[in-house]
Length: 431
Image (cartoon, rainbow, N blue to C red; front, top):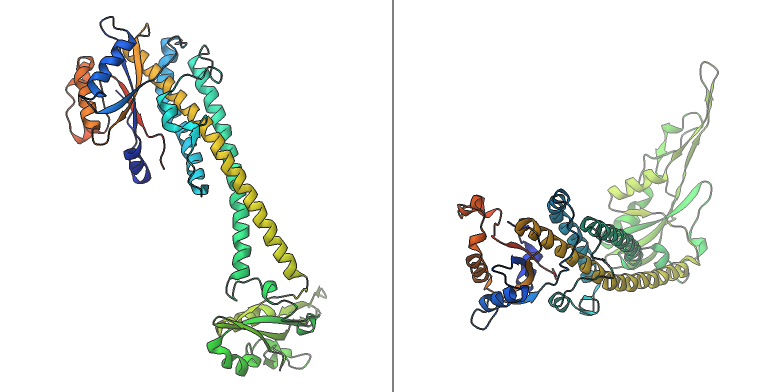
């Protein structure tokens, strides 16, 4: 029996046709050696006569520490989950590299193409001493991969944040008048300090006026918000209301696309003095804000009032900020790309060692001790995977457990694949 593989959809389905592998382990029967078993299978599945797949030996240490039956069964139950977790880390790095890669580079493992690494897989004794308990080997791999995932998350987040900051500043710099950074267009050659008033009582706003509404603006801007400002006598201000706009204060600054920029100066607000209540407690005065109310009234007429404080040096400052962000984004991009290339190989090696431990554990549980099986890697030829499976099933049908012999081909039975030998498939690359 094999653990069910997730259904292939989208990119994974596409990738499965590009490069799919089966990890298979079968017992050495009739006092045959591993070499003899391998050569017989090669003749039946990967020869000129039976050209169903390419076949490669998966060399595993024969003296991996098995431990107790209970520990082996516990590990066997957990290996599918560990396999998926480590594969998830491989996919994250691969996807990040794919998103960054502009030069058509291919990911490698220890400096060689992924397929070549798989075809010549051997246990990495330096990274994973095989005389450690299997559970300890798996635990160390999980811990190492977890640290790599966390590092990827931090690097990716930092790069994304800087990239978003740059995009935001570039959008403000090159967007329409509603969103552009006004400091980038209202430069000293367009406006001067005297064009703007910002005192205790007055404030100059910059208003985006659609060209189609320009005549309306010029005719009506002094009456916008004519119920906002209070001009009545001292003790009854609210009796007389009008617009807070200072007459003749609007001036056209520039036009761009289908909109224009005008200035307009308005009253900031009005202070209402405090008073004593009937219990002789003083209630402090309040400030009636006219600016926000004017913005709202202008918006209702399709005029967008924007706050702006003129600074002759701000344009140069913004240009410098954008340039610095571009340098930082490029630095983070190059660093993250290098990191992906370096750590993909490390994580992929960890994944293949997890698969090696998994096939070893499942084989010992299936075929028993002493260890006497051969592990191999099939790469099915396009459109020949069914014939390959039929050839393997026929050769090892005598190993089918009795409880699975009567399993039919119904949808329920097809939900989980049962084979009379150890087998699980995987797709090394998803792009």
